[in-house]
Amino acid sequence: MSLQPGTYNIINAKSGTALDLNDSEIDPIAGHPSHGGESQKWCLEQIFASQWTIRNVQSGGYLHVEGNEDGTSVTLSDVPFGWDIKPEQADPNEVRIYIPDTSTPINVDLADFGSTTSGTPVVIFKKWDGKNQIWRLQQVEI
Image (cartoon, rainbow, N blue to C red; front, side, top):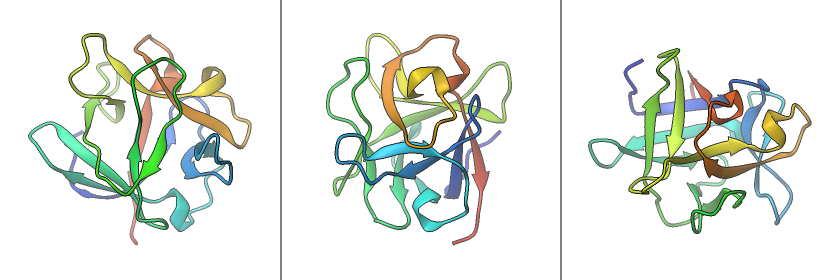
C-alpha cells in the first residue's frame, strides 16, 4: 500500500472497530463499531517524508499523545502531531501508527488486546506482534 493524503476510516485489524471520538474525557479516542459518521473520518496529511498528521473531520482536532509510557491515552489536540505510518510486513494493506523518534518502537494500540467492546480506549504501547496494534486504512469521501 502506498499511503496517499486523503480521508480515511481507520479500522483495527483485530477487532474490526473504527478509530472514533469518545464521550469520555479520560479516554477521548476509542474503538467503536463502524457507522460511517464524521467522528470516524480522519484526514491524513504528510508533513515530512515519513510523518503524517491525523486530523478528525468532525472535531478538527489532531490525533495526539503526551509522553510515551505504555497505556497512555491517545487524545486530540489543536496542535498537529507527526506520526510515522508504516505498512505491516505480513500484509501491506495494514499499517502501524508509530510515535516517531523513539528508541523502542511505540505504536497506537487498541486496549484490552483489541477488545470488540464499544468504547475500548485507544492507547500507545511498545510494539509487539498483536493484531490490536495493526490498522487498516479505508479511503472515504467527506
